[in-house]
Length: 263
Image 1 (spheres, rainbow, N blue to C red):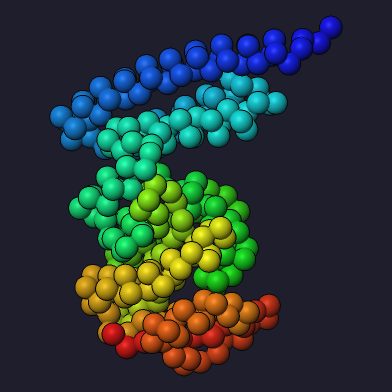
Image 2 (cartoon, rainbow, N blue to C red):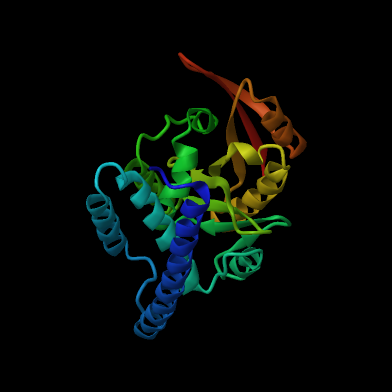
């Protein structure tokens, strides 16, 4: 006979208590690991170690639960990295992130250089056809492809950033600068925000922030962007920021307007 709902919830509550106790124990150990790494100059993120844990979780959980086990441990290790960095999972997280020496801040956003550990959240952008269309790129098929993309954006003279909301340090999208190989003082600016953040006015903040980075870090004299024909709101944001139409790029399945601005 199937157990009643109250009985099942009692069991779930018991498991929750055990999981919370184990989480606290795990984070305490992560704190000790952080102290050791700091004392010995070791990096917080060790991709080989995390991949072994993910492989173990997937194989041990069995076919039915493998995908859930992988996601669970990905999130758990992300929390552990935050704990090792000293970042609380609360509204204080953004304030802590904003104080990092490599952070670039606007009123509501924090830009941090992309890292290999960002592959999963970045894939939520790069794996979406409509978001990548705005970047004039094909969508990625895997996080491995996104990892290679992050590597490209993290290699000078390129500048790649994850965009976080300052109020809670939640991922909001990506932004990057790519100097023209033949004319380095001319820089491509690209921004892709996850869909739920489209109408929060973040692009208006990002444009001048990225222009400052282009000018100061890339020594750019001009910036250009690819804007899809159908994206009227994005086009208006760049026009208000002083960009003007310079050419139209027509492809087989899409048309882009190329806007430029002298810095």
